[in-house]
Image (cartoon, rainbow, N blue to C red; front, side, top):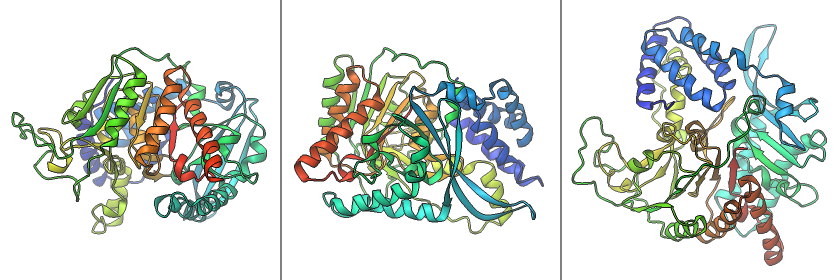
Length: 488
């Protein structure tokens, strides 16, 4: 079942007006979070669609949610089921950002703490308090800043930052994780932006050298999901070297609700990434015959949105992320209206529209009707990728997005999951073009040889660490740690 975002968009508009006219403005979001957090990937898409349809039929938001909650009653998961579903020799670390609540006064205090909930295959659990959210989030911001500026070859500041972040986030978990070979991480809020594999342990080795790291949206999947399907047949799709300056197709019409209006959606023209053509050819050479390659003017947003469940989807282009500070201010709204908008989940629409991938024509306003040259996460979420084994986002910053408690990061990574992709490879910061090609070559050779993509990425990063230590004496994480993978 494919849910269409234009229909959901209308639902949200109706939902806003309904909530604004009701007194129970605060009752919607907690219940939405509750049932959405309990749903599997396939259920999530169906529930969102059903929720929108219920709103369009005139149901109040909380009634619409109740109707969807009934679908999940038979899918309740307990700790034993999740533990039984974990990979062999693995522990699950589920992070949670929890608001502080005063039980006596029955009010939220406006502060929060991070917790780590650890589950091992035997069913034993342990809860670990990681401390105040503000402090930990400041540590994360400071640590990551070294990767966005400064000399990528200057190892010491990077190693110090990763060591400090190890002490704040990983060190409290060490005894509970023990000697488990694999660690399944389900990070919440800002923790989803951490390059966990690059955290530096006291023995001067990185976490990726100690453990195989899996990352998932929620650990609940291990208690419900059936065995993962084998890789499907079909033709892989490679998108590389879009023509950002391509002009609109003269034969297309911009009427009838088109987003393309002849004005670029970027403030400054994007520069061509010629090296992505080399990258695309390299990936095609490894995957073999029967690969669809979309380049230059053919790498349009419209064509990519029409792709149906390729086994592999590789996208080599600019990744774009609009920060929250760049969106229009809501300061003119009173507090109740602002809460209503948030409760209606409009923040998700805004968040999924702030991250995207640059496609052909983005500098000139798009390639015609319904194509402005920017493939947003909002667009991606409406694609049909339920048979897709692997999506690789080779552009810079493709792992970024808005971090929310209870949600993790809302951006391209979440959108491709909603669309149905099993594994998503993305980057947390920019790699040089040559380094990207080098790492992708190693990764794809292992993957095409039948290796699990998580292990393929792990082995590639371990090999790069070893080689950099031979050449430089140290292994600056900026050179090897940008890529991360979500899925299991």
